[in-house]
Image (cartoon, rainbow, N blue to C red; front, side, top):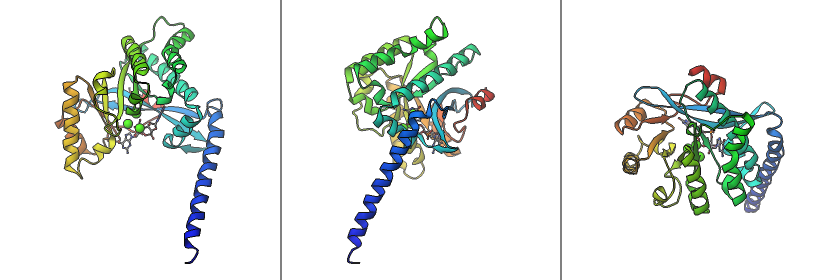
Length: 278
Ligand code: C2E
Ligand code: CA
Ligand code: CA
Ligand code: CA
């Protein structure tokens, strides 16, 4: 008992060391993941809850290393800390762009929603590169014009705080070309609501934590109702994320939310499974 404080301390240090080692390992392998074909983009359909029709899909990154699946929740932060996120983000955008082009060619207007990290916009140079990204895709494919209406960018509230003006200008330019801007995990950040007016935004995604707590805490119903009515007043579309149960579907319908994403309808799936659905 005498030394328990010290043991505790030792375990703590050990944990930190193990974590640092795992991070370093993952970083080492992540650097090679693109060239070794270990990344795959999955798609999770977003449906209209009244018709059940697929109206959009979110692209979600998967990394399978040595037969083991590593969650983006773990490797995206590592990619962000190391700067690898820029290369990975471009890989993701390329795959999503190719899928969007294929969908459009098949006459399917199902825009693909792509998660973008704050760090893909963190310098003027990167902002320029981001803006030119779609032109480069068009050049490579010898196309006339990129189908910007087929792409939605999901950004998080943290983006709104950094380099407000520059990022807002970049997103405005993309939006003029037809890209939609969606605020991901809405309500979980710390930024002020005024950015919804000052930023070029088309859509908000209600975070799944609100949807999951609808039944257990009635105050979450009030919160979601408030978000929905505010979105309506600002003419933003709403996506409810993480819908898993019939009662959550019922609530979403009551609120006349027109786009729903969650395991109740579909889990994220491979591109070929996704195309098989359409
Ligand atoms: P997110 O953008 O909030 O994505 C939604 C997450 O919720 C996904 O987890 C999805 O599989 C999961 N989900 C969807 N429906 C349900 C449901 O009904 N119940 C529950 N419990 N979960 C549901 P996933 O695929 O593990 O991705 C986790 C996070 O990793 C994403 O959260 C996003 O922040 C990040 N991420 C994924 N792909 C990318 C990417 O290509 N680029 C970047 N920058 N981040 C990504
Ligand atoms: Ca997202
Ligand atoms: Ca989300
Ligand atoms: Ca998230």
